[in-house]
Image (tube, rainbow, N blue to C red):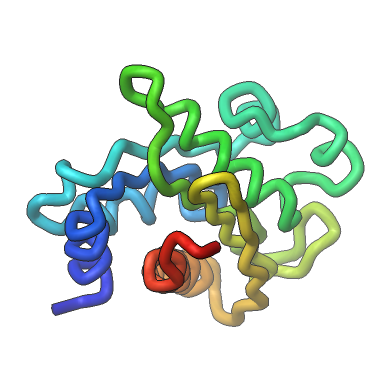
Length: 164
């Protein structure tokens, strides 16, 4: 069984659903999740907010955070993950878990950060976390590794349980 299939099984076993907000991965993460048969039972959906204005308007990332730090920052990733849980609420019930990706895929630097600077955001319950990454490789490799690390990060979040 692959890691994504294991994640879908873990989400199902815990009766969790997940919502995804993507920037640098441009839909690859939600595509990876829905690759697994049965994912429709746990995947709420995904939003590609590539433009910074969409991070603000759709995902409710605080303007002051964006103005001070730009879109490539741990706080932006955390707010994207929290915001997508609300945006993809069903019957006014937020998604159980939010995951987000923001960063610089390359080929060169952007927003003052070198290619490979990535933040994965996670949100569950009342908490939110960011996983900072410094990846190497070309644009496709950075994006693919971000997806892989996002799957692992959500699995680790679930494994921690509700104590966090």
